[in-house]
Each structure stands twice: as structure tokens, then as C-alpha cells.
Length: 103
Image (cartoon, rainbow, N blue to C red; front, side, top):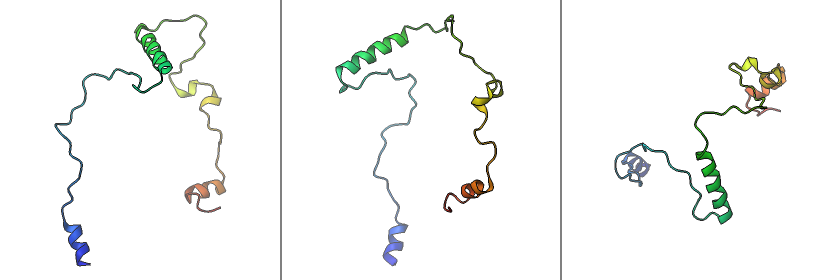
């Protein structure tokens, strides 16, 4: 028992060492494919990257789009925001409260 107490009382020095001061990068990383990625993936990735960077910063309104944006969740149709189960039974509530340990 004394060996255990002696072992616990020793200062634990972590085996990992960080070099330098911790800094948050000021610029964002440029996405790029992994060097070992297949060539077809690298071609698709560069084409996709070029298409996303060539898009204008202001959104362009497209005719024929019917996507609706709602400010409040209750403005959306009820099937989107209304829960599927309106009320839980006592049996379901008991199983939830017990952590599912009882059947």
C-alpha cells in the first residue's frame, strides 16, 4: 500500500511537449486534394474548386426557384416543425427516465 501512495504522490510529467506559443492562424487554409488521391478525384476537386471561386459574392436571383425561406419556424408548414409524437405515454416516459434499463 505504501508503494501505491508513493506512486500517486509523484508529479506526473506529460510525455507530449508543444513547441512555441499557441496561435490561431490568421488566414484560412486553401482546400486541396490529398497528394495520394486518385487522379480522377484530383481533377474533379480542382474543377469544383475553380467553379466555387468563380461564383459572384452577391446572390443572383434565378427565375423558377420556389425555395421558401422562413424567418420563424412556425411560419413553415406544420409537417416540418411539428413533432411526430404529440404525447409520450407513461410507459415510454418511465423507460426514458430509467435509461432504458427496464423493459
